[in-house]
Amino acid sequence: MIELKNITKSFDHIVLDKINLKLQEGNIYVIKGISGSGKTTLFNILSFLDTNYEGKYYWNNKDVKKMNRDDLQTIKNNISYVFQKSYLFKKLTIKENLLFIKDDIDKIKEYAKKFDVEKLLDKKPEEISGGERQRISLIRALLLDSKLIILDEPTSSLDKENAEIFRDYLKEIINLDKIIVIATHKNIYDEIANCIYEIDFGRLKLVKEEINEKNDNNNDNNDEEQSSFSKYDFLFVKRRKEKRIVLMIVMTLFFLLLFSGISIIQNLKKESIKDYAKKYPIQVLNIREDDLPYIDYKIEKEYFNYNIVKDDYKAYTLFDANDSYFQKQDLIKYGHFPKTDDEILVNEEFVINKMQLENEEAIGKTIEIDDNVLTISGIICGTDIYTWENNEIYTDIVDVETNEIKPAIFILYNKIKEIKTAVKDQTIIISMSKNDIIDIYLKSKDGYVKFFNSASLNHFHTIANKEYTIYNYVKIYLEIGLVFILFMFVFMISKILLELYYNKRQIGYLRLYRVSNDRIHLIFLIDYLTEILLAFIFACIIFNIICLIIKLSIDWNFYISLINWGIIIFISIVYFYGLVTIPIMKYLKKDILECINYD
Image (tube, rainbow, N blue to C red; front, side, top):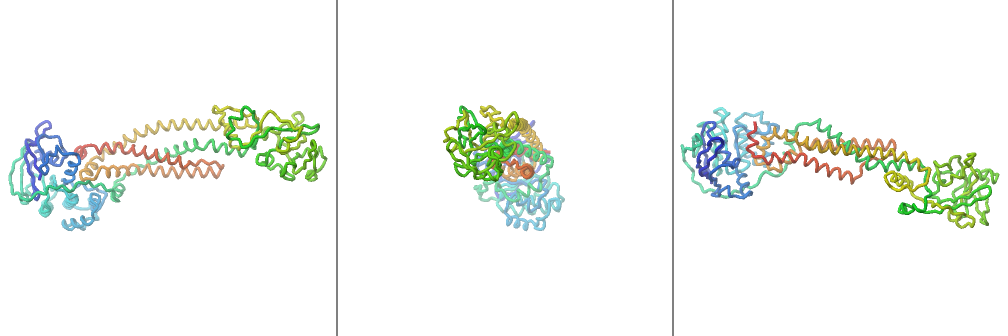
Protein backbone atom coordinates (compact mmCIF):
# COMPACT_ATOMS: atom_id res chain seq x y z
CA MET A 1 0.00 0.00 0.00
CA ILE A 2 1.10 3.55 -0.78
CA GLU A 3 -0.08 6.56 1.16
CA LEU A 4 0.59 10.28 0.73
CA LYS A 5 -0.27 12.58 3.64
CA ASN A 6 -0.47 16.36 3.39
CA ILE A 7 1.90 16.52 0.42
CA THR A 8 2.64 20.13 -0.46
CA LYS A 9 4.85 21.31 -3.30
CA SER A 10 5.65 24.85 -4.34
CA PHE A 11 7.65 26.52 -7.05
CA ASP A 12 6.89 30.20 -7.47
CA HIS A 13 3.37 29.27 -6.40
CA ILE A 14 1.67 26.30 -4.71
CA VAL A 15 1.39 23.40 -7.16
CA LEU A 16 0.19 20.72 -4.73
CA ASP A 17 -1.77 21.77 -1.68
CA LYS A 18 -1.96 19.21 1.17
CA ILE A 19 -2.58 16.20 -1.05
CA ASN A 20 -3.82 13.02 0.66
CA LEU A 21 -3.90 9.85 -1.40
CA LYS A 22 -4.07 6.14 -0.57
CA LEU A 23 -3.26 3.50 -3.22
CA GLN A 24 -3.98 -0.20 -2.75
CA GLU A 25 -2.96 -3.23 -4.82
CA GLY A 26 -5.40 -4.60 -7.36
CA ASN A 27 -6.90 -1.18 -8.16
CA ILE A 28 -6.80 1.34 -10.97
CA TYR A 29 -6.63 5.01 -10.00
CA VAL A 30 -7.43 7.77 -12.46
CA ILE A 31 -6.36 11.34 -11.78
CA LYS A 32 -7.98 13.88 -14.07
CA GLY A 33 -6.98 17.43 -14.64
CA ILE A 34 -6.11 19.96 -17.29
CA SER A 35 -2.57 20.75 -18.26
CA GLY A 36 -0.82 22.58 -15.42
CA SER A 37 -3.16 21.30 -12.74
CA GLY A 38 -0.38 19.40 -10.91
CA LYS A 39 -0.73 15.86 -12.28
CA THR A 40 2.87 15.58 -13.47
CA THR A 41 4.25 17.07 -10.25
CA LEU A 42 2.21 14.57 -8.21
CA PHE A 43 3.51 11.71 -10.36
CA ASN A 44 7.10 12.91 -9.95
CA ILE A 45 6.71 12.75 -6.18
CA LEU A 46 4.91 9.40 -6.35
CA SER A 47 7.76 7.94 -8.45
CA PHE A 48 10.59 9.44 -6.34
CA LEU A 49 11.78 11.63 -9.19
CA ASP A 50 11.09 14.62 -6.94
CA THR A 51 11.94 14.29 -3.26
CA ASN A 52 11.80 17.98 -2.35
CA TYR A 53 8.34 18.39 -0.85
CA GLU A 54 6.52 18.81 2.42
CA GLY A 55 4.39 16.06 3.95
CA LYS A 56 4.70 12.32 4.44
CA TYR A 57 5.12 9.51 1.91
CA TYR A 58 4.52 5.96 3.19
CA TRP A 59 5.32 2.77 1.27
CA ASN A 60 3.97 -0.31 3.01
CA ASN A 61 3.51 1.84 6.13
CA LYS A 62 7.18 2.94 6.13
CA ASP A 63 8.16 6.60 5.88
CA VAL A 64 10.32 6.78 2.74
CA LYS A 65 12.26 9.79 4.02
CA LYS A 66 13.56 7.66 6.89
CA MET A 67 14.61 4.72 4.72
CA ASN A 68 18.21 3.89 4.02
CA ARG A 69 19.59 4.04 0.49
CA ASP A 70 19.20 0.33 -0.27
CA ASP A 71 15.58 0.16 0.89
CA LEU A 72 14.77 3.27 -1.09
CA GLN A 73 16.36 1.78 -4.22
CA THR A 74 14.26 -1.36 -3.73
CA ILE A 75 11.12 0.76 -3.81
CA LYS A 76 12.28 2.63 -6.92
CA ASN A 77 12.78 -0.74 -8.57
CA ASN A 78 9.09 -1.45 -8.01
CA ILE A 79 7.88 1.46 -10.15
CA SER A 80 7.36 1.37 -13.92
CA TYR A 81 6.20 3.99 -16.41
CA VAL A 82 4.11 4.35 -19.53
CA PHE A 83 4.20 7.80 -21.08
CA GLN A 84 2.25 9.65 -23.72
CA LYS A 85 5.12 8.84 -26.09
CA SER A 86 6.45 5.33 -26.24
CA TYR A 87 10.16 6.30 -26.14
CA LEU A 88 11.19 3.11 -27.89
CA PHE A 89 14.73 3.06 -29.26
CA LYS A 90 14.29 3.73 -32.97
CA LYS A 91 17.20 1.69 -34.28
CA LEU A 92 16.25 -1.49 -32.42
CA THR A 93 13.43 -3.84 -33.34
CA ILE A 94 10.50 -4.20 -30.96
CA LYS A 95 11.88 -7.49 -29.67
CA GLU A 96 15.34 -5.98 -29.22
CA ASN A 97 13.82 -3.03 -27.35
CA LEU A 98 12.15 -5.40 -24.90
CA LEU A 99 15.14 -7.72 -24.58
CA PHE A 100 17.35 -4.73 -23.87
CA ILE A 101 15.16 -3.90 -20.84
CA LYS A 102 14.68 -7.52 -19.70
CA ASP A 103 16.45 -10.46 -21.29
CA ASP A 104 13.52 -12.87 -20.89
CA ILE A 105 12.29 -14.01 -24.30
CA ASP A 106 9.68 -16.38 -22.85
CA LYS A 107 8.05 -13.60 -20.87
CA ILE A 108 8.18 -11.29 -23.87
CA LYS A 109 6.44 -13.85 -26.08
CA GLU A 110 3.82 -14.44 -23.38
CA TYR A 111 2.97 -10.74 -23.15
CA ALA A 112 3.18 -10.30 -26.94
CA LYS A 113 0.56 -12.99 -27.37
CA LYS A 114 -1.59 -11.55 -24.58
CA PHE A 115 -1.55 -8.06 -26.16
CA ASP A 116 -1.74 -9.32 -29.75
CA VAL A 117 1.60 -7.92 -30.96
CA GLU A 118 3.42 -11.16 -31.83
CA LYS A 119 3.68 -10.15 -35.48
CA LEU A 120 5.26 -6.82 -34.54
CA LEU A 121 8.30 -8.11 -32.66
CA ASP A 122 10.63 -8.03 -35.66
CA LYS A 123 9.55 -4.57 -36.81
CA LYS A 124 11.09 -1.20 -36.01
CA PRO A 125 9.10 1.33 -33.90
CA GLU A 126 8.48 3.60 -36.90
CA GLU A 127 6.86 0.67 -38.74
CA ILE A 128 3.98 0.25 -36.26
CA SER A 129 1.07 2.48 -35.22
CA GLY A 130 0.83 4.70 -32.16
CA GLY A 131 -1.60 2.34 -30.45
CA GLU A 132 0.71 -0.60 -31.05
CA ARG A 133 3.66 1.34 -29.67
CA GLN A 134 1.70 2.06 -26.48
CA ARG A 135 0.96 -1.63 -26.07
CA ILE A 136 4.67 -2.32 -26.39
CA SER A 137 5.32 0.35 -23.75
CA LEU A 138 2.86 -1.41 -21.46
CA ILE A 139 4.63 -4.75 -22.04
CA ARG A 140 7.93 -3.06 -21.22
CA ALA A 141 6.47 -1.82 -17.92
CA LEU A 142 5.13 -5.27 -17.09
CA LEU A 143 8.45 -6.94 -17.87
CA LEU A 144 9.97 -5.02 -14.99
CA ASP A 145 7.44 -6.73 -12.68
CA SER A 146 6.73 -3.59 -10.67
CA LYS A 147 4.12 -3.06 -8.00
CA LEU A 148 3.30 0.50 -9.12
CA ILE A 149 2.67 1.27 -12.80
CA ILE A 150 2.33 4.95 -13.63
CA LEU A 151 0.69 5.98 -16.91
CA ASP A 152 1.03 9.64 -17.83
CA GLU A 153 -1.49 10.55 -20.56
CA PRO A 154 -0.85 7.20 -22.31
CA THR A 155 -3.60 7.58 -24.93
CA SER A 156 -3.72 11.33 -25.47
CA SER A 157 -2.25 10.98 -28.95
CA LEU A 158 -4.31 7.91 -29.94
CA ASP A 159 -7.61 7.78 -31.79
CA LYS A 160 -10.68 6.50 -29.97
CA GLU A 161 -10.42 2.93 -31.26
CA ASN A 162 -6.78 2.46 -30.24
CA ALA A 163 -7.37 4.23 -26.93
CA GLU A 164 -10.19 1.78 -26.12
CA ILE A 165 -8.02 -1.21 -27.08
CA PHE A 166 -5.28 0.05 -24.76
CA ARG A 167 -7.83 0.62 -21.99
CA ASP A 168 -9.16 -2.94 -22.31
CA TYR A 169 -5.67 -4.37 -21.81
CA LEU A 170 -5.36 -2.48 -18.54
CA LYS A 171 -8.39 -4.37 -17.20
CA GLU A 172 -6.53 -7.63 -17.75
CA ILE A 173 -3.37 -6.72 -15.90
CA ILE A 174 -5.03 -5.26 -12.81
CA ASN A 175 -5.64 -8.82 -11.63
CA LEU A 176 -1.85 -9.13 -11.23
CA ASP A 177 -2.08 -7.27 -7.91
CA LYS A 178 -0.55 -4.15 -9.36
CA ILE A 179 -1.32 -0.55 -8.51
CA ILE A 180 -2.11 1.37 -11.71
CA VAL A 181 -2.26 5.15 -11.61
CA ILE A 182 -3.34 6.99 -14.75
CA ALA A 183 -3.07 10.71 -15.40
CA THR A 184 -5.52 11.90 -18.05
CA HIS A 185 -7.96 14.59 -19.06
CA LYS A 186 -10.27 12.10 -20.82
CA ASN A 187 -13.18 9.99 -19.57
CA ILE A 188 -12.13 6.84 -21.39
CA TYR A 189 -10.83 5.12 -18.23
CA ASP A 190 -13.84 5.90 -16.04
CA GLU A 191 -15.49 2.51 -16.46
CA ILE A 192 -12.37 0.54 -15.47
CA ALA A 193 -11.25 2.86 -12.66
CA ASN A 194 -11.76 1.80 -9.08
CA CYS A 195 -11.05 5.30 -7.92
CA ILE A 196 -11.27 8.62 -9.78
CA TYR A 197 -9.81 11.90 -8.58
CA GLU A 198 -9.90 15.35 -10.04
CA ILE A 199 -7.01 17.71 -9.44
CA ASP A 200 -7.40 21.45 -9.82
CA PHE A 201 -5.09 24.20 -8.61
CA GLY A 202 -3.13 21.66 -6.60
CA ARG A 203 -6.13 20.26 -4.71
CA LEU A 204 -7.27 16.66 -5.03
CA LYS A 205 -11.01 15.82 -5.06
CA LEU A 206 -12.41 12.27 -4.88
CA VAL A 207 -15.05 11.66 -7.58
CA LYS A 208 -15.50 7.88 -7.55
CA GLU A 209 -14.41 5.15 -5.16
CA GLU A 210 -15.00 1.41 -5.58
CA ILE A 211 -11.91 -0.04 -3.96
CA ASN A 212 -11.20 -3.76 -4.25
CA GLU A 213 -10.19 -4.73 -0.76
CA LYS A 214 -7.29 -7.16 -1.01
CA ASN A 215 -4.61 -8.23 1.35
CA ASP A 216 -1.72 -5.98 0.50
CA ASN A 217 1.50 -7.77 -0.25
CA ASN A 218 3.99 -5.86 1.82
CA ASN A 219 7.02 -7.68 0.42
CA ASP A 220 8.89 -5.73 -2.21
CA ASN A 221 10.79 -8.54 -3.87
CA ASN A 222 11.86 -6.69 -7.01
CA ASP A 223 15.02 -5.20 -5.55
CA GLU A 224 17.44 -5.34 -8.47
CA GLU A 225 18.11 -3.07 -11.39
CA GLN A 226 18.67 -4.59 -14.82
CA SER A 227 22.40 -4.79 -14.29
CA SER A 228 23.58 -7.76 -16.34
CA PHE A 229 25.36 -6.72 -19.51
CA SER A 230 24.17 -8.65 -22.57
CA LYS A 231 24.62 -8.84 -26.31
CA TYR A 232 21.71 -6.45 -26.70
CA ASP A 233 23.77 -3.72 -25.08
CA PHE A 234 26.39 -4.17 -27.81
CA LEU A 235 23.57 -4.14 -30.34
CA PHE A 236 22.26 -0.94 -28.79
CA VAL A 237 25.69 0.65 -29.14
CA LYS A 238 26.08 -0.58 -32.72
CA ARG A 239 22.69 0.71 -33.86
CA ARG A 240 22.84 4.11 -32.20
CA LYS A 241 26.51 4.73 -32.83
CA GLU A 242 27.69 7.74 -34.80
CA LYS A 243 30.86 7.43 -36.84
CA ARG A 244 33.55 9.81 -35.68
CA ILE A 245 35.97 9.53 -38.61
CA VAL A 246 37.90 12.70 -37.80
CA LEU A 247 38.42 11.54 -34.22
CA MET A 248 39.72 8.17 -35.43
CA ILE A 249 42.17 9.79 -37.89
CA VAL A 250 43.46 12.22 -35.27
CA MET A 251 43.85 9.44 -32.70
CA THR A 252 45.63 7.18 -35.21
CA LEU A 253 48.18 9.94 -35.92
CA PHE A 254 48.49 10.61 -32.21
CA PHE A 255 49.24 6.95 -31.45
CA LEU A 256 51.71 6.75 -34.35
CA LEU A 257 53.64 9.74 -33.05
CA LEU A 258 53.53 8.32 -29.52
CA PHE A 259 54.81 4.90 -30.66
CA SER A 260 57.53 6.55 -32.77
CA GLY A 261 58.76 8.66 -29.87
CA ILE A 262 58.89 5.74 -27.47
CA SER A 263 60.54 3.54 -30.10
CA ILE A 264 63.27 6.10 -30.78
CA ILE A 265 63.97 6.62 -27.08
CA GLN A 266 64.12 2.85 -26.58
CA ASN A 267 66.04 1.77 -29.69
CA LEU A 268 68.03 4.63 -31.21
CA LYS A 269 71.16 4.26 -29.12
CA LYS A 270 71.12 0.47 -29.20
CA GLU A 271 70.68 0.33 -32.97
CA SER A 272 73.29 3.07 -33.54
CA ILE A 273 75.79 1.09 -31.52
CA LYS A 274 74.93 -2.12 -33.33
CA ASP A 275 75.24 -0.47 -36.73
CA TYR A 276 78.57 1.23 -36.04
CA ALA A 277 79.92 -1.88 -34.33
CA LYS A 278 79.54 -3.61 -37.71
CA LYS A 279 81.40 -0.85 -39.56
CA TYR A 280 84.37 -0.34 -37.26
CA PRO A 281 86.78 -3.18 -36.49
CA ILE A 282 87.76 -2.19 -32.97
CA GLN A 283 88.13 -5.26 -30.81
CA VAL A 284 90.92 -4.46 -28.35
CA LEU A 285 92.29 -1.10 -27.35
CA ASN A 286 94.74 0.37 -24.87
CA ILE A 287 93.82 2.45 -21.88
CA ARG A 288 95.59 4.09 -19.01
CA GLU A 289 95.86 1.91 -15.95
CA ASP A 290 94.13 4.66 -13.90
CA ASP A 291 91.05 4.37 -16.08
CA LEU A 292 90.67 0.63 -15.55
CA PRO A 293 88.19 0.86 -12.60
CA TYR A 294 85.67 2.81 -14.72
CA ILE A 295 85.03 -0.11 -17.05
CA ASP A 296 86.25 -3.10 -15.09
CA TYR A 297 82.72 -4.60 -15.08
CA LYS A 298 82.64 -4.70 -18.89
CA ILE A 299 86.14 -6.03 -19.59
CA GLU A 300 86.38 -9.53 -20.96
CA LYS A 301 90.21 -9.87 -20.88
CA GLU A 302 93.23 -7.76 -19.96
CA TYR A 303 96.60 -7.85 -21.74
CA PHE A 304 99.80 -6.00 -20.93
CA ASN A 305 101.21 -4.44 -24.07
CA TYR A 306 104.48 -6.32 -24.78
CA ASN A 307 106.75 -5.82 -27.77
CA ILE A 308 110.27 -6.81 -28.85
CA VAL A 309 112.47 -4.45 -30.84
CA LYS A 310 115.04 -5.91 -33.24
CA ASP A 311 117.37 -4.11 -35.59
CA ASP A 312 115.27 -4.46 -38.72
CA TYR A 313 111.83 -5.55 -37.47
CA LYS A 314 109.63 -5.49 -34.41
CA ALA A 315 107.63 -8.22 -32.66
CA TYR A 316 104.16 -7.34 -31.36
CA THR A 317 101.70 -8.99 -29.02
CA LEU A 318 99.17 -11.19 -30.80
CA PHE A 319 95.91 -11.42 -28.91
CA ASP A 320 93.73 -14.49 -28.61
CA ALA A 321 91.78 -15.52 -31.69
CA ASN A 322 88.50 -14.14 -30.31
CA ASP A 323 90.10 -10.72 -29.79
CA SER A 324 92.45 -10.53 -32.74
CA TYR A 325 91.65 -7.94 -35.36
CA PHE A 326 93.41 -10.10 -37.95
CA GLN A 327 91.19 -13.08 -37.23
CA LYS A 328 88.00 -11.02 -37.07
CA GLN A 329 88.62 -9.26 -40.36
CA ASP A 330 89.88 -12.34 -42.19
CA LEU A 331 93.24 -10.73 -43.03
CA ILE A 332 95.25 -13.96 -42.89
CA LYS A 333 95.51 -14.69 -46.59
CA TYR A 334 98.00 -17.56 -46.31
CA GLY A 335 98.09 -20.24 -43.65
CA HIS A 336 96.06 -20.04 -40.46
CA PHE A 337 95.87 -18.37 -37.07
CA PRO A 338 98.37 -19.84 -34.57
CA LYS A 339 97.10 -22.94 -32.80
CA THR A 340 99.97 -23.27 -30.30
CA ASP A 341 102.11 -20.76 -28.40
CA ASP A 342 105.10 -21.55 -30.62
CA GLU A 343 103.32 -20.51 -33.81
CA ILE A 344 103.37 -16.90 -35.02
CA LEU A 345 101.97 -14.62 -37.70
CA VAL A 346 104.11 -12.40 -39.92
CA ASN A 347 103.14 -9.68 -42.34
CA GLU A 348 103.73 -9.88 -46.06
CA GLU A 349 106.50 -7.28 -45.83
CA PHE A 350 108.45 -9.48 -43.43
CA VAL A 351 108.30 -12.43 -45.82
CA ILE A 352 109.36 -10.40 -48.84
CA ASN A 353 111.96 -8.09 -47.28
CA LYS A 354 113.44 -10.24 -44.52
CA MET A 355 112.99 -13.79 -45.73
CA GLN A 356 113.02 -13.01 -49.46
CA LEU A 357 110.48 -15.73 -50.11
CA GLU A 358 107.11 -16.02 -51.75
CA ASN A 359 104.19 -15.98 -49.36
CA GLU A 360 103.32 -19.64 -49.82
CA GLU A 361 106.97 -20.67 -49.23
CA ALA A 362 107.12 -18.96 -45.82
CA ILE A 363 104.41 -21.09 -44.22
CA GLY A 364 106.09 -23.59 -41.84
CA LYS A 365 109.45 -21.77 -41.76
CA THR A 366 110.96 -21.02 -38.34
CA ILE A 367 112.33 -17.88 -36.71
CA GLU A 368 114.56 -17.79 -33.66
CA ILE A 369 114.09 -15.01 -31.11
CA ASP A 370 116.15 -15.10 -27.94
CA ASP A 371 116.56 -18.91 -28.01
CA ASN A 372 112.86 -19.38 -28.83
CA VAL A 373 112.15 -21.18 -32.07
CA LEU A 374 108.87 -19.96 -33.54
CA THR A 375 107.05 -21.38 -36.57
CA ILE A 376 105.21 -19.20 -39.11
CA SER A 377 101.60 -20.43 -39.34
CA GLY A 378 100.08 -17.58 -41.32
CA ILE A 379 100.77 -14.41 -43.29
CA ILE A 380 98.89 -11.11 -43.00
CA CYS A 381 98.34 -9.16 -46.20
CA GLY A 382 97.03 -5.61 -46.63
CA THR A 383 97.99 -2.00 -47.13
CA ASP A 384 95.69 -0.12 -44.74
CA ILE A 385 95.28 -2.57 -41.90
CA TYR A 386 97.58 -0.67 -39.54
CA THR A 387 95.97 2.76 -39.77
CA TRP A 388 94.43 4.62 -36.85
CA GLU A 389 91.05 4.32 -38.52
CA ASN A 390 91.19 0.53 -38.40
CA ASN A 391 93.46 -0.40 -35.53
CA GLU A 392 95.18 1.53 -32.74
CA ILE A 393 97.52 -1.21 -31.46
CA TYR A 394 99.82 -1.67 -34.48
CA THR A 395 99.94 1.83 -35.93
CA ASP A 396 103.73 2.27 -35.61
CA ILE A 397 104.21 -0.52 -38.17
CA VAL A 398 103.66 2.20 -40.77
CA ASP A 399 106.63 4.54 -41.40
CA VAL A 400 105.18 8.03 -40.98
CA GLU A 401 107.79 9.58 -43.30
CA THR A 402 107.65 7.14 -46.22
CA ASN A 403 104.19 5.68 -45.51
CA GLU A 404 105.72 2.25 -46.04
CA ILE A 405 104.78 -0.80 -43.96
CA LYS A 406 107.61 -2.14 -41.82
CA PRO A 407 108.30 -5.86 -41.39
CA ALA A 408 106.57 -7.23 -38.30
CA ILE A 409 105.87 -10.48 -36.53
CA PHE A 410 103.07 -11.23 -34.07
CA ILE A 411 103.63 -13.54 -31.10
CA LEU A 412 100.81 -14.89 -28.96
CA TYR A 413 100.42 -13.13 -25.61
CA ASN A 414 101.18 -16.20 -23.50
CA LYS A 415 104.48 -16.66 -25.37
CA ILE A 416 105.72 -13.07 -25.76
CA LYS A 417 105.39 -12.27 -22.06
CA GLU A 418 107.83 -15.16 -21.33
CA ILE A 419 110.53 -13.87 -23.68
CA LYS A 420 113.24 -12.07 -21.70
CA THR A 421 113.77 -9.20 -24.12
CA ALA A 422 110.03 -8.39 -24.34
CA VAL A 423 109.25 -4.91 -23.02
CA LYS A 424 105.96 -4.11 -21.25
CA ASP A 425 104.32 -0.85 -22.25
CA GLN A 426 102.72 1.58 -19.75
CA THR A 427 99.25 0.97 -21.11
CA ILE A 428 96.93 -2.00 -20.76
CA ILE A 429 95.19 -3.67 -23.67
CA ILE A 430 91.59 -4.54 -22.88
CA SER A 431 89.26 -6.86 -24.71
CA MET A 432 85.55 -6.05 -24.69
CA SER A 433 82.62 -6.21 -27.06
CA LYS A 434 82.46 -3.55 -29.75
CA ASN A 435 78.97 -2.69 -28.55
CA ASP A 436 80.32 -1.93 -25.08
CA ILE A 437 83.20 0.11 -26.45
CA ILE A 438 80.86 2.32 -28.44
CA ASP A 439 78.29 2.47 -25.65
CA ILE A 440 80.87 3.70 -23.14
CA TYR A 441 82.16 6.23 -25.61
CA LEU A 442 78.66 7.58 -26.22
CA LYS A 443 78.13 7.81 -22.48
CA SER A 444 81.22 9.96 -22.25
CA LYS A 445 79.33 12.52 -24.34
CA ASP A 446 76.72 12.66 -21.61
CA GLY A 447 78.99 13.32 -18.64
CA TYR A 448 80.87 10.04 -18.24
CA VAL A 449 84.63 10.13 -17.89
CA LYS A 450 86.24 9.77 -21.28
CA PHE A 451 89.21 7.51 -20.74
CA PHE A 452 90.05 6.16 -24.21
CA ASN A 453 93.21 7.31 -25.95
CA SER A 454 92.18 5.70 -29.18
CA ALA A 455 92.25 7.94 -32.23
CA SER A 456 90.02 5.50 -34.04
CA LEU A 457 87.27 6.30 -31.54
CA ASN A 458 87.10 9.79 -32.99
CA HIS A 459 84.79 8.25 -35.55
CA PHE A 460 82.18 7.92 -32.85
CA HIS A 461 81.93 11.67 -32.46
CA THR A 462 79.64 11.47 -35.47
CA ILE A 463 77.56 8.77 -33.84
CA ALA A 464 77.26 10.67 -30.60
CA ASN A 465 76.33 13.94 -32.26
CA LYS A 466 73.65 12.34 -34.44
CA GLU A 467 72.25 10.22 -31.66
CA TYR A 468 72.01 12.98 -29.10
CA THR A 469 70.60 15.44 -31.61
CA ILE A 470 67.80 13.03 -32.53
CA TYR A 471 67.36 12.03 -28.90
CA ASN A 472 66.96 15.65 -27.79
CA TYR A 473 64.48 16.38 -30.58
CA VAL A 474 62.44 13.37 -29.54
CA LYS A 475 62.48 14.52 -25.91
CA ILE A 476 61.18 17.91 -26.98
CA TYR A 477 58.53 16.22 -29.09
CA LEU A 478 57.43 14.05 -26.17
CA GLU A 479 57.26 17.09 -23.88
CA ILE A 480 55.11 18.89 -26.44
CA GLY A 481 53.09 15.69 -26.77
CA LEU A 482 52.46 15.67 -23.01
CA VAL A 483 51.04 19.18 -23.21
CA PHE A 484 48.92 18.10 -26.18
CA ILE A 485 47.66 15.07 -24.25
CA LEU A 486 46.55 17.29 -21.36
CA PHE A 487 44.92 19.73 -23.77
CA MET A 488 43.18 16.88 -25.59
CA PHE A 489 41.91 15.52 -22.27
CA VAL A 490 40.14 18.79 -21.51
CA PHE A 491 38.96 19.24 -25.12
CA MET A 492 37.57 15.70 -25.44
CA ILE A 493 35.78 15.87 -22.10
CA SER A 494 34.10 19.08 -23.28
CA LYS A 495 33.15 17.44 -26.57
CA ILE A 496 31.73 14.33 -24.86
CA LEU A 497 29.83 16.49 -22.37
CA LEU A 498 28.26 18.36 -25.28
CA GLU A 499 27.23 15.11 -27.01
CA LEU A 500 25.84 13.73 -23.76
CA TYR A 501 23.88 16.94 -23.25
CA TYR A 502 21.97 16.19 -26.44
CA ASN A 503 21.56 12.56 -25.35
CA LYS A 504 20.65 13.16 -21.74
CA ARG A 505 16.96 12.37 -22.30
CA GLN A 506 18.03 8.95 -23.53
CA ILE A 507 20.20 8.54 -20.42
CA GLY A 508 17.28 9.63 -18.26
CA TYR A 509 14.88 7.09 -19.75
CA LEU A 510 17.44 4.31 -19.54
CA ARG A 511 17.70 5.00 -15.82
CA LEU A 512 13.94 5.31 -15.56
CA TYR A 513 13.55 1.85 -17.11
CA ARG A 514 15.90 0.59 -14.40
CA VAL A 515 18.90 0.02 -16.62
CA SER A 516 21.68 0.17 -14.03
CA ASN A 517 24.26 2.95 -14.00
CA ASP A 518 26.96 0.33 -14.60
CA ARG A 519 25.25 -0.80 -17.80
CA ILE A 520 24.69 2.75 -19.02
CA HIS A 521 28.30 3.59 -18.21
CA LEU A 522 29.55 0.56 -20.12
CA ILE A 523 27.28 1.27 -23.10
CA PHE A 524 28.57 4.80 -23.55
CA LEU A 525 32.11 3.71 -22.72
CA ILE A 526 32.01 1.19 -25.57
CA ASP A 527 30.48 3.80 -27.85
CA TYR A 528 33.20 6.39 -27.32
CA LEU A 529 36.12 4.01 -26.99
CA THR A 530 35.38 2.14 -30.20
CA GLU A 531 37.08 4.76 -32.41
CA ILE A 532 39.96 5.04 -29.98
CA LEU A 533 40.44 1.26 -29.93
CA LEU A 534 40.28 1.08 -33.73
CA ALA A 535 42.74 3.97 -33.96
CA PHE A 536 45.08 2.14 -31.57
CA ILE A 537 44.85 -1.06 -33.65
CA PHE A 538 45.40 0.78 -36.95
CA ALA A 539 48.33 2.69 -35.48
CA CYS A 540 49.87 -0.57 -34.18
CA ILE A 541 49.54 -2.19 -37.61
CA ILE A 542 50.98 0.82 -39.46
CA PHE A 543 53.78 1.26 -36.94
CA ASN A 544 54.83 -2.39 -37.08
CA ILE A 545 54.75 -2.36 -40.89
CA ILE A 546 57.06 0.68 -40.85
CA CYS A 547 59.33 -1.12 -38.35
CA LEU A 548 59.40 -4.18 -40.63
CA ILE A 549 60.34 -2.06 -43.65
CA ILE A 550 63.15 -0.40 -41.68
CA LYS A 551 64.33 -3.79 -40.45
CA LEU A 552 64.43 -5.24 -43.97
CA SER A 553 66.00 -2.11 -45.46
CA ILE A 554 68.80 -1.19 -43.04
CA ASP A 555 68.54 -3.92 -40.38
CA TRP A 556 67.62 -1.48 -37.61
CA ASN A 557 65.18 -2.81 -35.03
CA PHE A 558 62.65 -0.18 -33.94
CA TYR A 559 60.06 -2.56 -32.50
CA ILE A 560 58.78 -1.63 -29.05
CA SER A 561 59.49 -4.13 -26.28
CA LEU A 562 56.67 -6.11 -24.66
CA ILE A 563 57.25 -4.33 -21.36
CA ASN A 564 56.86 -0.93 -23.01
CA TRP A 565 53.78 -2.15 -24.87
CA GLY A 566 52.33 -3.18 -21.54
CA ILE A 567 53.06 0.26 -20.08
CA ILE A 568 51.57 2.00 -23.14
CA ILE A 569 48.41 -0.10 -23.01
CA PHE A 570 47.99 0.37 -19.25
CA ILE A 571 48.45 4.14 -19.41
CA SER A 572 46.16 4.37 -22.46
CA ILE A 573 43.43 2.38 -20.69
CA VAL A 574 43.61 4.60 -17.60
CA TYR A 575 43.77 7.80 -19.69
CA PHE A 576 40.91 7.07 -22.06
CA TYR A 577 38.80 5.37 -19.40
CA GLY A 578 39.01 8.54 -17.35
CA LEU A 579 38.45 10.66 -20.45
CA VAL A 580 35.09 9.00 -21.14
CA THR A 581 34.06 8.11 -17.59
CA ILE A 582 34.28 11.61 -16.10
CA PRO A 583 31.57 13.15 -18.35
CA ILE A 584 29.41 9.99 -18.30
CA MET A 585 29.39 9.83 -14.50
CA LYS A 586 28.45 13.50 -14.38
CA TYR A 587 25.23 12.72 -16.25
CA LEU A 588 24.56 9.55 -14.30
CA LYS A 589 24.58 11.64 -11.12
CA LYS A 590 22.04 14.12 -12.48
CA ASP A 591 18.43 13.86 -11.41
CA ILE A 592 16.40 11.69 -13.76
CA LEU A 593 13.80 14.44 -13.87
CA GLU A 594 16.38 16.93 -15.11
CA CYS A 595 17.36 14.55 -17.92
CA ILE A 596 13.90 13.54 -19.18
CA ASN A 597 12.58 17.10 -19.15
CA TYR A 598 15.20 18.08 -21.75
CA ASP A 599 13.72 19.75 -24.85
